[in-house]
Image (cartoon, rainbow, N blue to C red; front, side):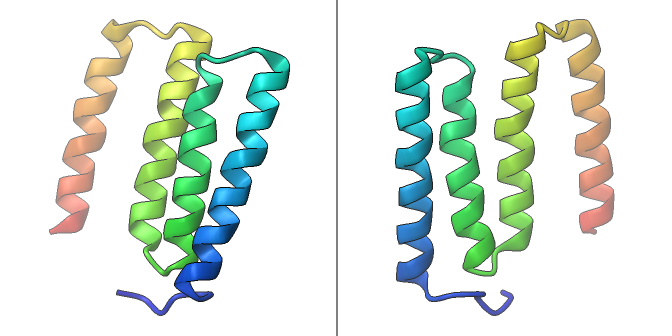
Length: 96
């Protein structure tokens, strides 16, 4: 594991603050879906990044932002399923 950029408790505090700010914005705008995916995913990825878990942060961002984009732009599953399998295969090949 890589060296953390800041202490774990500071990373937790920053990600919690970011979550609360995002949650307040979602409440104010009254736009729950799919914005809640960003409100959950970005602070989670930030905490992982600040604690030195860079690969986990990239995967978290990819998943949560991906779900946001899919829901926001109504992308067809006919397009998504092949892309998902190709990206999974590339990830497995690169990891080995």
